[in-house]
Image (tube, rainbow, N blue to C red; front, side, top):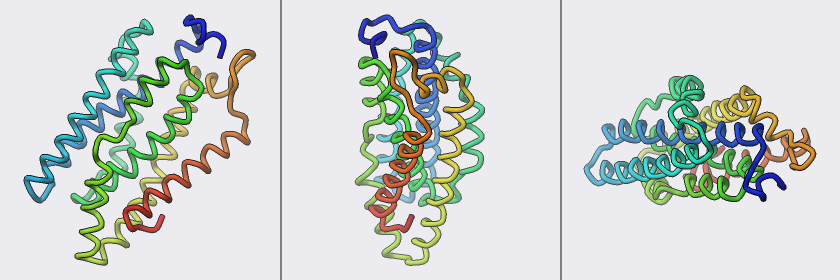
Length: 228
């Protein structure tokens, strides 16, 4: 996009970038807080250490996002505050009942959110995009969670059916959350719509994006040994 290439994006673009960064940053903060809580449900010390390491990585991602928001001339706390209510509503609707549900939420729910933000990041300037992509990197949870969930299912086959249903519920709630984040903020809506000098998403492209998100979710569930 021409404005971002010049390093001086217009005001609408700047606000959209701040909005997106604020949403992702609050997501990282809530992921950090949630993982700390999940660690309390972990059955053993090894699991507590692994989840604690994930929480630490999430906080590291948060710091880079906060720095980029400040570079764009906004107050990071204010940018994040705009998304607090919607994230807290999402987490209230998807509170895990046990350790395994917490693992699925960390892997499936956070994975879907990361996929969504990667899609939108494609419409941002290179510097902001790089910060976002770096913040969405695997925090080491993939191998650990896959191993724990598969072992749990092998020990109790009934667990697989319950977790598959939980994964489907998370998918629905996360897609609703993603649509709300994109649709409730005028600046983000404008970013996705594009402009004279910026490409955007038409309805067909938006449909393809959500198809890709669904396919990635299905693959993620399969890796866990669960049906999407």
